[in-house]
Length: 178
Image (cartoon, rainbow, N blue to C red):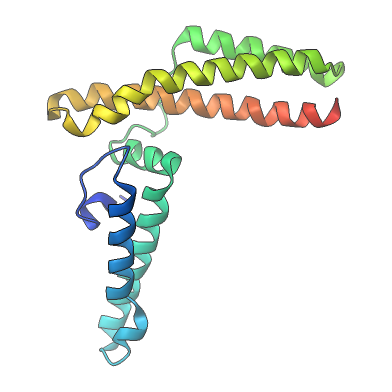
């Protein structure tokens, strides 16, 4: 299991951390665990420092990026494991319709269809973002028994966002052809 980066940084688990506090903690630990400052230590201690420096770098890279942070938190709660990734049927139907339109573009490029699908994806994304924002903002203040429900909502959001990202990538290909 991945180490708990929030514990490592002595920060609460949150989807919206204090960016300045995160950066301060990263720089403080970067100085503390810089291998050059431990050159006279035993080989075992030097190896330990190197591992801590690597942990610090990995923690910062993960927690500083909103998408990686979200995936990390969901993984820590075992919500990105195979078989635990179900999406609502209504969303899957919408995505299927968009994918069908993309498949048609494969045979018959049409800038109007690209524009239409782009608007649809943007509208779905905007709705998703607006719906998840209160959940992300309120997560740290939730009692422990309410967090699983919030995490399920975040999981659904994350998976939907990934679907929409794949559609955007396909759209980018078709937009360059049109």
